[in-house]
Length: 222
Length: 253
Image (cartoon, rainbow over all chains, first blue to last red; front, side, top):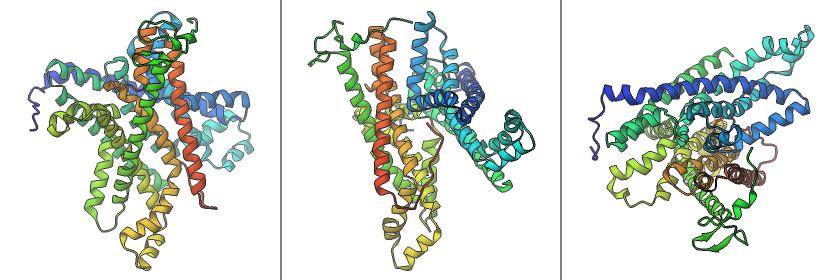
């Protein structure tokens, strides 16, 4: 078919090339989502604190990250770290740190929108029953905000999973790299890229289908 | 931290000597600043052509997905969006650059620029199609009925009633998509299109001035994104219907 030949793909090749990359892609996605949500929440709270000395640095960080291309941030961090600390860190560790720092900016915007979607009356009600800021956030605002933004958070995670392919730039071994290496070693790069596309598509399509279902469920409850 | 040396931008790209005019006389005799501005030109060219493709294709597909009484066109449009939205951009660039020319002999002679612009444009078209669809569906049904009531054909009701309103609704997300395409164009470095990211890799390695090159390139990316934002916001203000406020979108890269 169209000069393509997939016969070289077998289970052996998948276990020796592809799975290692898939594990790293998933690991990076999970770590960056968790770290991004944690630091993103902090950034969002800083921006909503109403205190200028917290708001301005957070806004600067978030807007800076959001206006730079992810590829440049990945490359820049990987190449600049040796200048600052005097020795290189591995591509994998560099990718993890970059993704957490980068995604925190995006997650913080989602969090901010989610927190702002809670009516002011809820905040006042919390204060009226004598809750501190921390209690109010933890018991009243954040649980509701999380529920409102769950679909958006999950969509962002799917985008994040796709973006992990960009660690290609610094040579980290992810799903795409796994297929590419296999393709090069067997002299079948085109077929390898096609299969990579199919695998990414199946994973992302399945995830976005789940998000759609979840969205409907939440929409009924609210 | 290494000492900062901004003079590196005035250095000749071949022998490393500092050029007096910081620019070079053209041909092979150019400075890193000159090279960087050329790379910026490539970034702008890839992004703008990609944006035009994305707007045209995205609008067509988006409209297709809302057509009444044509379930197959709707399905085709939905499939288009799912296909281009669920494969990472970098993989799509590789597909256009390496795979399609091998599968389709007629594409063998295509220059890399065209292939990358197609990849970027089609990737973004799926996202714009999604915006166009949601913009059209956000309109009250009455508008469509009103158009048919005065005897408009489907084409006329889209041309005169639905699209003029829908585009105004989706203008804010379109602004962020236009900024995204500038950022996403950096991916073209993977297939050696001399965009800014590619310049950063090469010039940083040649000169060892990683920090300076990073600052220069990132500044140009930010300037590009902000300029697009200003221009698009100005257009939006001119088009705005008084008393009609549209909501913005979040998420995405």
